[in-house]
Amino acid sequence: MVDNLYDQFVKYHGDAQALVAVFTGKSVHLATVCVGGYAGDVEKLSGLYSTVRTRPESMRSFLESVIPTLWKYLSMHLPDDVGDRPAHMISSGTPFYSGLASGYVHSYLAASGGVLIADTKDPGSVERARLVPFYPERVGKITLARGSNLDERCYSYSEVGYYEWNGTKYACEAGPLTRFSGSLQGRG
Image (cartoon, rainbow, N blue to C red; front, side):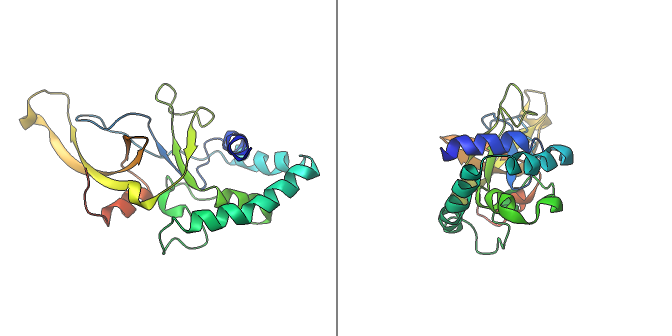
């Protein structure tokens, strides 16, 4: 049931990247550059609050009862310096919309912080993306080559952060996750 709720919340807050990182759904390999982060859609995010308020009281009660459990579980897997926004270190860089800074909706979003992996066929769609749990030990750095020429002398190389999920490394060049990975030893 919690998975279904995640899908609903991701759907309604659209591209406003409050507490998640955005990655293109491609395996990391030479000459592939995966850029994370979109501009937020404040109207969609605001609509989330209105939508949730109109839900049955039972849903609200369920969310309020589940939040402490999620928060406790996720807190055990997050860096010590994350603060009161548990996933801001792995957000895409778009600020959390302050209009939702109070109430149980904010608490739910805070507790549900994770990594949003975009669909390869439609990387701009949050509705088709997957929200997966965040584990610090799955963050690392990998060297990517840039360029279209097969001659390796024509490439430039740079290290970018990545998040590994189900055996695939998803790279991100922008946002706090990249800064976080910068403090780690390269594992790519």
